[in-house]
Length: 198
Image (tube, rainbow, N blue to C red; front, side):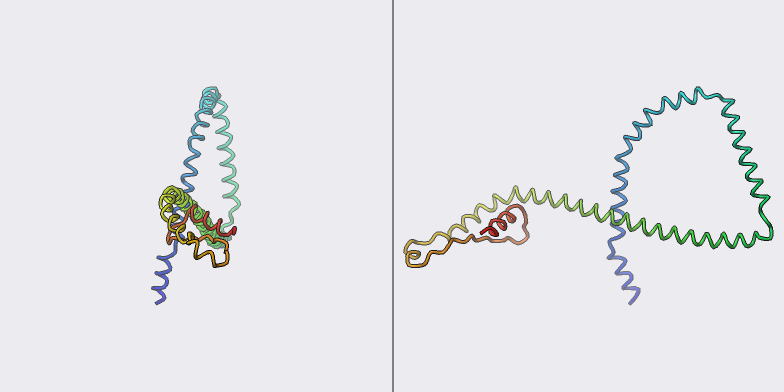
């Protein structure tokens, strides 16, 4: 049963989907930056090409030779400092450090995964919100046509014959509101707001 429970939990967990949505949203955000980077490179390219053309080849070769000598000297220094007796201990120490570093990277990867999934969840909520706003706008455009017959039926019970109301005490006319199942929009909010004022 534990395997079935784990499988059910894995299949119902929305985190991977949120991670995918977050990755897509971040990719779109980064893609929006590309035209600016291209323009910047296009603007800087002539100056860089001119600098390469005007560079003294002998000076560049001299700098490369100095850098190569420095690297060779440092490499020889490191090789000279290695003690063959301590090499085994150093290898074991490096292996333990490697395990620690791998564990640290695993923790960082999990944190990054969670952050991207959280970003994806927020992106999905904003996408759903945008869709909901569009639905509310459409419902607002359609609802006034649908609410006209409803207004006529609400007005009928309020009109009473004069004989029936003559003997009864006068009561303030209450507003009758009816809620439709499955609809929400500006009409329902306006009715609720006007009903709360009385």
